[in-house]
Length: 640
Image 1 (cartoon, rainbow, N blue to C red):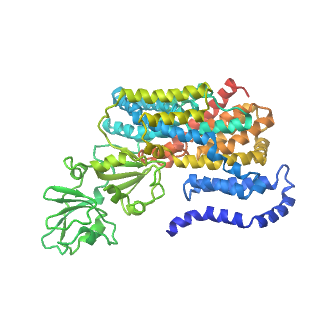
Image 2 (cartoon, helix red, strand yellow):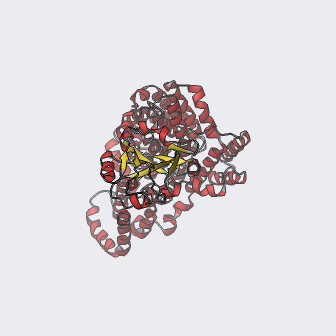
């Protein structure tokens, strides 16, 4: 409890102090004004907003709690400090009713409908037949298909649907999944830049652009640039990028136990006839242990039992499979009438039982999972799902000990022994992505056509401006539910609430940055350094600066912070402000150098076994290439 409270302290203290000591802050501000006035264009409002931005950047990087929750504190702070932020209560809460927030919520539900129809899975299942075991062909096909799908529905659900397909393709063709998963994530980001609906960043940027320069994005307004960016990225990934991506995971067999190098942490023991434990329940013996040992499976007369095993009575000749180090296990079994079967090496086949429906699977923690920031014990996961936990993988690191106390992050992979019933429950939960070689689904062509028809209608109505995009997407949600493509309960599960809270919290911050003159001030400082260059070079500098920022904080947060600054900079040098808005929008979706800068990178971090530096190695060259390509073609298409 104390650990959880510590996470809240920074924001809680900040809000309480600001609320209680507003008079003192005001008096200090008056004194500070005497010193601030010596800096041209600088004032107390800019100082307060700039300090808030710096604080938020620090919290986003440190992430003591989910960034969506951190963002929810922003309207509170803006309202409390309204003397300097110049934001009314209505403006502070405007993010919740903003068209961008509504549209993004609706798009998550529309994406779920497309997934439920089987369209994404059907496309994925055609990959293996098309590519075979040709790795470059696999990269090209995965990149192309992912980019196309991510251009018309939100890219995060596309990656969630494709990760199991790609990892299973890798296993069946004996290709390292590391070689395929970075292209999958990058392609979803590149494809998301093709249309307005590709990513929440585009929708948010459109609303900010409409507010600042009265120019919202059309559905296909930047498609020509998006296609060029996508093609450049595709060529890079199948040529230079292919050779830069390391093979972190080497699949030498179909044995997950061997792939996870678990042989030293799984042992089988036998209960002897003279054991003092006979007649006791497993719960009695193992529950209060200080040693890090877990019972994974019990075998009795050919029948295998999994957790929960607490109520099972220990009998002679019982066999137990135990997870733990050999040293710890030897200490435990000493003088307990338990024999270590040292000649038996545990493998996947031994643990699985097709008759009883027991199998080993990998489960990825999705970016909006309730498990993020929690431990296995916190959420009672193993008891809730009747599963046995074998190992946890985060990036390249695999943990075998104290698993129930490890704090989980998005992208972590759990190696589980489950039953068919548990597997079906996990498949229905959007908090998890199941890496399992599932039987081919029986697709319904009518459902696929219906789902794609609803999406086409939404795009058509919005692009022809018959109704606003927010209303069009909401109408699409109603149609998806009415046609039973999305169950009413799934409506709430499909929404990534962290993204929604982030938008609702940060949209009023963008208003504040503009109204207080902070955007103009920051633009002035940047132009003092870059003003000697031609406009197209300044555009490139803004693009790359935004890329660096989006690699360490959320893409949506970057767009909110940088678009007002870019617009002000464009006005000051007499350039086309829309060109600068586009540069920032494309840059905010180009977090290729970091696994933490974009949700899809997090989702493939664990399954690919990557190191942090792998993203820098593969992503940095692509970012540099696009820092030239994007400004150049913006200047050609829209002028500067």
